[in-house]
Length: 457
Ligand code: NAD
Image 1 (spheres, rainbow, N blue to C red):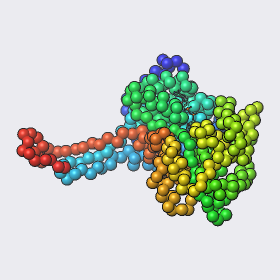
Image 2 (image 1 turned 45 degrees about the vertical axis):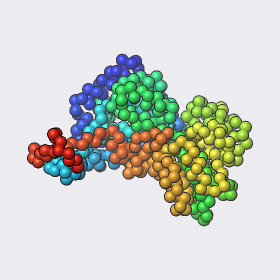
Image 3 (image 1 turned 180 degrees about the vertical axis):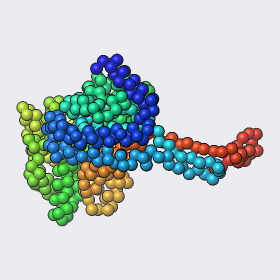
Image 4 (image 1 turned 90 degrees about the vertical axis):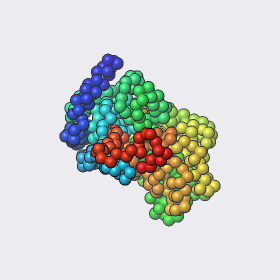
């Protein structure tokens, strides 16, 4: 699409917003209902495009994308009226008689740029909140999931108000052209590198941004006793590493932190679960493309990294597949430990004492989530108090992403801006305090000439 084309897309969306129609409850509800209908009627098409783009199994595609998004639409439909309603704000007695309320207003025309690993979910999840808070929207899904992107571009206009909800297809060049425009908010899901470019472009127009980025999510695994707890942990670790999109997920475990003496037991348990869950390339989501296959293969090529492989490690450059791979203590300055892995490789970093995991995490950029498997209350407390991350999840993985009531987002290098459930509504709204006063009670000491007294509210 030419720049003029994008200009026209944006001006039509702006016109739709300025008409005021997106602000009404009826429009918001009708669009959410239409989106739910879209999901119900085209479920098979969505499962098919996710298979085409990523080889996603239909069960995984439903669990991580279609099902979660349906749940979100229902959550917004059920709550939107309550969320839109003004809420009272207390005013100090000194200002009597004054009332104040917080009125939620939509931001305007918002841009959503999404990534390829959950190409439907990560496009529609923010879209739901942008609709429920009354905005006009331009969505650009990732070009690396072309079937999903085409599906969204072709299907959304058939169900939703095509003047106010627009889908633009394209890659970096189109994204850059979009970013030159003036938006009322940019909601970006993607890499840190592109996140910086998005923020730089947004600064020109003073546009607020939400950056949903990635990073290296650690999982601390304490030396658990009790075979059941250990097995449950191994299952949840495998699900949290290879489960979402074969490790290509922002919330996937990047590496494990474990005591030296417990590492061999844990690795055997993980290997057992990999076998039990039958995790292998031909039964998992695909590595998305040759570029990412090569990026991941290159992480293993460093001889010191290669010698740390204790499981898997074989790569097939004809089929672009990589076996689930476990490495023990690869060099900490190797790329596999300095860059986000986003794939099926799992480094296990051994420590003398599990408490050393706190310093390990603190020495690195703030992750999107810290996972910790432990029953030790003191250690849990230290993880909460002494590390910083978008979220902390104890004794499980991924669950925080699936709960509408939990704000999802990063901190520091893993991004900023929370969403999911009401937090998505808030992300796309401006909470505007509206103060009302009558003409009674005029305090002369407010105004000069001053008599030396201080005014305290
Ligand atoms: P990416 O940054 O390469 O691309 C994301 C989006 O930005 C795409 O729509 C793409 O077309 C666009 N884009 C690419 N180059 C651009 C440029 N120079 N200027 C403007 N836009 C540009 O990310 P990706 O490869 O799609 O996704 C992987 C990354 O996203 C990982 O770091 C992962 O952790 C992160 N991620 C985060 C979340 C989250 O919710 N926090 C979810 C999924 C992925």
